[in-house]
Image (cartoon, rainbow, N blue to C red; front, side, top):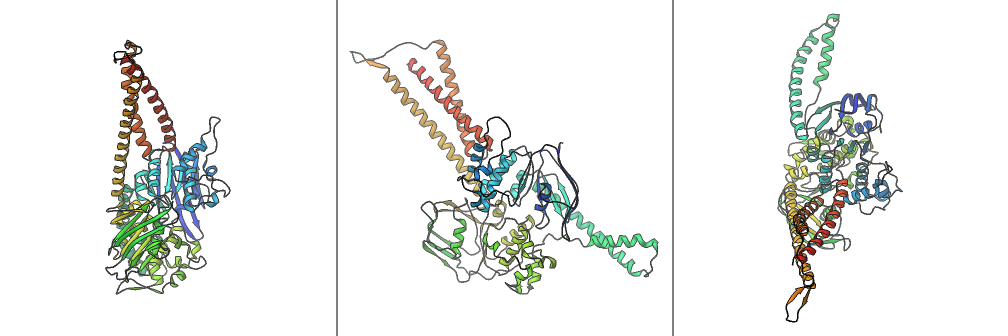
Length: 616
């Protein structure tokens, strides 16, 4: 194995908070590694240290000489005056023909960044992340580091990137919360847990099984430690104050055992056991709701729907199809052009939005922000928690509660926002991209909460795993006001969609072949008629009557064999190019080959027609 990166005894702390200590491991050519940790454990800091963006306390980070490293940061840097195309185009490395701008155009188009002359300063956060992803992929690094690459991508783009990374022979280290993505792309998982690093040689599914084994073993070991601690504690209490030197090793051992016994193995660090308020049988009814921003941007067109009690719906569709606008209309934040929503009297909305993340006053402490909403939170008929106790359920320790909000990580900030939404005991949750920046542990517990939630849920998400666990059916926003109600989870929908697309491609290919055959027959008849004259008796004869030579017969036989093969290759290439599973280089090569095939078919068909004319 060729070593690409060796990390030895790496230690990093921020203030008095230790993130990781004495970390040692290697990354080798071809490794595809997912990095997993709880929010605030230092995932992004870890990547920044490896990429040379942050310093560290001690240890070493050594890359193999000469390897190219590409890094997609969570907040990518950019020149605001650059155009998207200039930003994404890779630097020229060789003296041969430079195809960088062409490759950049094709990749940007793939990522729906079609206005390539726009200034970088005008882009949204999602568009900036896409442009930065294009830039780093086109730089063709030997070692690629990605921090949350799937955030802001729609599902089709996530699947494209997934397939791209699987096929590419590159070394990869990434942080992502997308579990399907992790499972398909990665062959190794590294977890930061309690300042240590654990390595698992397998995909995400393998990691889950082996991690559970580790936790079970640690739990058994902890039980032994606590039993031994009780014995040692009894011994310590029975000793006189002036202990002899012979007992020093037992005293030291006691303190070590005491430290080990404080390890918290609970996986339910985020406890979302917040009750919902009662919800009646009438939820909402949409009556002929229409909304558009222009003739080109139509959100809904005479849409009608009656929402049922305890219904859980996922909303999917391309970026810009109107998903967020739809839920804002439901909440009364945006007015429809015509029609209306009739909301039930008992409905109590809880809205988790993208914009809500910015509503916090960064100058306030965590505990003060929560107390402004409520001093106490009702969990159920028997339990009421103080604001501080409630925050403890969301993994905010008393020390964390005294932090100023501006010092929270992105994931911690999202967790706090989620707490403020749920503490109001809503019975109809509307969640707009709740999975961005949440760690996998928190996501799992949020999913458990939503599955058992005694209310209604509408969720917009690009996280396929999350959708599959939560929703009963989907609203698919297809654009131009069309909304399809699909009865099933996302994976079932995607499977049906692929089958439908495959059948359409096959039908289109068959139709094209039939049309081509009809054109050939018509051209052949026309050419034959043009080569005939009418005799005085009314009969026809060819202007130049002759038979095919032996060589021409062989040529005709060859053409009749080759043309079906070329048509077959053309059809297969069309299907591949429409699949969205080809890399940029493959798309360029396929386009060139497609033109060669078309030219060759035209040339050979023309020659075959000439031979058929002679043959009569």
